[in-house]
Image (cartoon, rainbow over all chains, first blue to last red; front, side):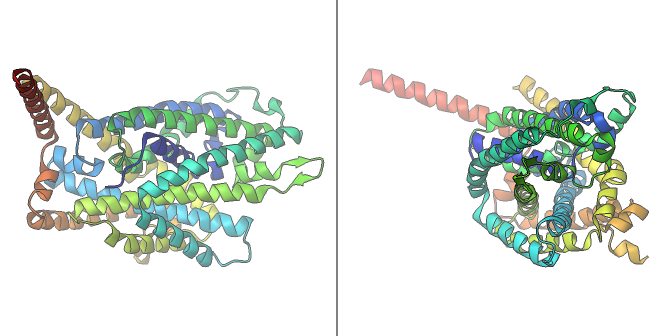
Length: 366
Length: 82
């Protein structure tokens, strides 16, 4: 069985949770208070992630998917369990669509999107075939590089003289209303609710007792990272441009200009955006394949790699004709989609309560 | 009607947001029959392990730990005797 260490899980989780939010911005609807909305989302999101970890703790030896039939019975639990790989597959299609819109717009305008996505999915297929252990080792190497590049970009942004902290003030001038609109439910779904897919990775960890602590650390780190990036973007662009920008973080890197010499570093940003999207897609497809293996009682999960990758590619290619519609779905439909709300909040809370009660009863009777 | 064939597409999700959840529900029920049928034919122990209640597994772990501690104490007694 593939085994990953605590450090590998930490690096996977950090990159996963920062994920595609670094591309499209997070909590842009809150304007100049977006950094505060991110911090509040981080607080509640970390609690949600903690609930996911406790569910697996109360059900030792079972993957997250198997907890539903185990606790709710096979009639009710099995359909709920099956909704998870379907959701993971849909979200992986969304990330593929993100790449389809981002890369041709930024660094490869003359390349047909299907070619970019074909190579993207081929690499993901190879990663899936190689296993989660290889991905753990890769993220251990890549995360310090990404953080270093990010640090250099921050230094260069400050050196460019484009940062105006006045843009962050006044704080909460339009009240708490727009902050809560952004926090619930989209702020918690993005990055934190989506950590549900990581629950299928936890069974591969060698130190199972450290899962909860590792996930809390990664959630807090990712939240602070995104909050800082939002604050930086608002201080450079101001509230109105930040709210309207399609790729605010990409625009932030484009703003770097030191003595008219160090300019046009946007390609470096796109490269680590792509890696984050790559890892996020990988984890979703890994979770899909692992779920399929468990739900069909298959010996090997490799037989599902090819069909799952093909379906994700097809979903990504056909999902949205343009980025405007793609983003509109995220803003208007997904926060109120019953699938997201039930699988990320309602069912996990019910499962947590049922698991906790049964655990208490079995502890008391023994 | 044609829209309902592609419920994951963004224009369909914006016009008919309930199409995708309904598709998920239908697919999950249909696929559940696959799980139920395969669980009967799963290799012995695999299906049982997956259907085993988690509090039963915790009980087995405790019993296994107590058995291990009994074994180690017996080994220690043997060593002192020798």
